[in-house]
Every structure is written in structure tokens, then in C-alpha cells.
Length: 217
Image (cartoon, rainbow, N blue to C red; front, side, top):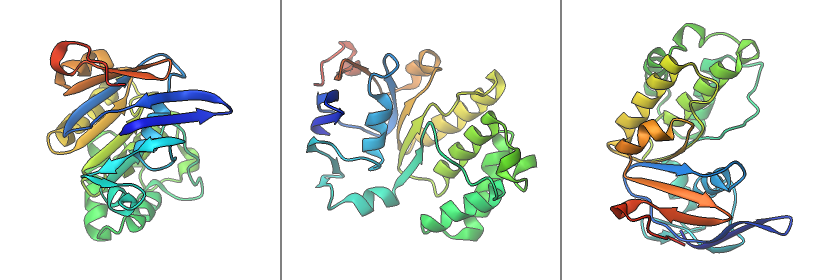
């Protein structure tokens, strides 16, 4: 990201933000409303900046948008799930949209949901799911296809401690190979395993990379 400016109703949410994301876990921290979710939506190409440029593997967007999306796994903080589908049907729908082999995706979904304590409910309608179950489903679909760029907005919210730790273990495993950018209330626990911690406040971004709180924007 280079010189990113994002405004809503005349208010600058992100102000001249520049940063590079590298393989490993990057944590986004900052006060509520600081722009963390906005930054993740920009990473996921769900929104466009008002000013500035975004590149994927050296190629600028929008030209590289399709390549980025093919490599992307995105779990937003809030999403309207189709209550009339089962969790498995929804996951396979998302796998089809990603262009994944459905048989392989089905096996991966089963393994993922087993690890995060959701497997017993995957054939139940989403309408019967609690908030924590929905959160785990959103997380599981984001991880399908072993994406190389993963954007996670509070994936451990509404989860009990044991389940949150299970989800965290999956995230750390993927961070060994992929770029993982995440907001979470478990930031303090995960910070020692992160390659970077980016703090957003008043539209500005500061990085802890290099141990000096380097100003990135």
C-alpha cells in the first residue's frame, strides 16, 4: 500500500497510509473505529481507496485484482450468512466461487471444522447457529484452498478461550506459509509470534517492525 487515503462522509479514516505485508502474521491494533476493519476491506478489495495505490506481487490494482482474489481468504467481522443453507452447503458455495476442487474443499472443510469444534454441526442450517458458531464458519470458509493472503477481522470474537486457542493454532500454522493480516482481542498473546504489529490511530499507521515503532505513514 502506498499513500492510501480512505474517507467516509468527509472524515479521513486512513490518512496517507503506506506499508508492505510480508509472509507471516501481521496484527492490526488500535482503538475502536480507528480504521482496522477499513484497512482489511481494502486488502480484500472489498473497497477501493480514495487516493493511493495498492499492489499485489508488484502488480498494481485494479489490474491485479483477479490474481489477488484468487490468492485471498477473507473473514469479515460482520456478514449476512444464508440462514437457509447448511454450513457445509455454504462452504461449498464459497469453494465454487473460489474455483476450488469441491471434493478436495469438502475434505479440507471437514478437517478444519473438526479442529475448531464445528464439525458436528456442519450439516445443520445456519439459522440454528449461535454467534460463535457463525464466527467459526466464516473463518473456516476463509481458509479453504490454502490461500496465500488471509485477512481476518476478529476471528476469535464470541469464542470461548479453548476454541479461540484452536482457531489461533490454525492461524499460526497458515502464517508459516502465507501473509496473514488480522485484528483480534488476543493481540497481546499473539504478538510474540507476529512478524509485525501495526497500530492505527487517528488515520495514521505505525509499525513495530525493527523494534523501534517505525512510523510507516
